[in-house]
Image (tube, rainbow, N blue to C red; front, side, top):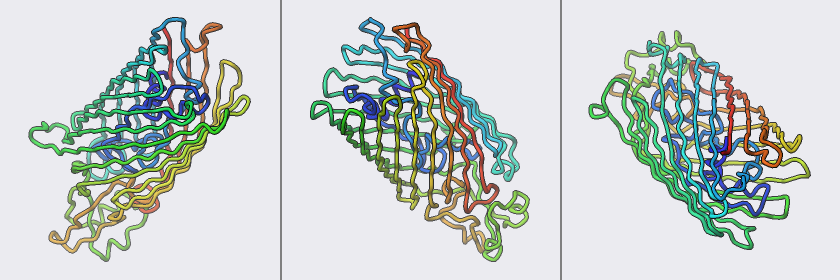
Length: 440
């Protein structure tokens, strides 16, 4: 998936050094999702949790063969054009499914050092999770449309990249923009990166115009990083990110059950919908989250190129002002089966505690005693995720231009255990994507 490769080269561009220390760096300014470190960025509880690769508290960066291996191969022209189509899918044991077709295109001049790209995708979401059943709501179905335009310019050792993006559903509208600067030093063996992004989201309710009901969420992101070529086969990197969010991220569809103090202490982990309905009090207020959130992450990356394989390891630590702490370890081992075929196994572990105001069951002595902060989002509670899978990439172009046609597919499975939540004790999920990338 060439645009995805370019996006990763922009968003996580230092990975382009992992195999080839002379590969140009152009990391696009990372625009954070509207929410989250362990919670979904979507406004409704029916939306699927982000696959682990996209989760803010559990983020892994690129998922495919090493970026240097995916770099565009010149076809003899000073301007190269590539088009990409992808079908991705997500399915989990809480009756949530997502189908995401997308198209993309990139035009670049390797000799002049510039590139422009664009992408358009559609998310078709269907869900009938316990959260929906507990509110006596019908099965949830929705379509999200999203797109972005980006550029990069790096004629020598100093480069700049930018990106603008938007997404829309009937109850959520998002706009974002970012810029990234990169500089190569020490004969291109040291690369420095800094970036800034801004986004604004409007959160509403389906069937209600934004002019009647809406909430605003604004965020600023700052990224700093460095990558060092240690030798011809080893590259290490350290990257820091900060995201400052201001606004009400509370889900306008999520109602929080309350219990008397005595009953709250008896609600078990994984309590069924029937148990919750039979035990809760009459009051059921909407979710209320803090109106600001500051997120911080520090990520270390290592890539070690062997004779016909590459080991890539990433470790990421996360902390935020809501008290959430998380650690994510991601390992991929790319094996060059032949000049045309690359395969890779993939393993992943994510651990996190819960936010400071997390409670499995919120206690209340009446309508005048409602907890000021409350949530039913199990992604904000303590959890652990184990997962793995792999992928395969085929270079199908003719001899001498094998990269002109590339077909790749990935499949990963995940098990998540929610240590202190009602409705769901564990979730099994699968994420797959098949991509065709063609050069013209």
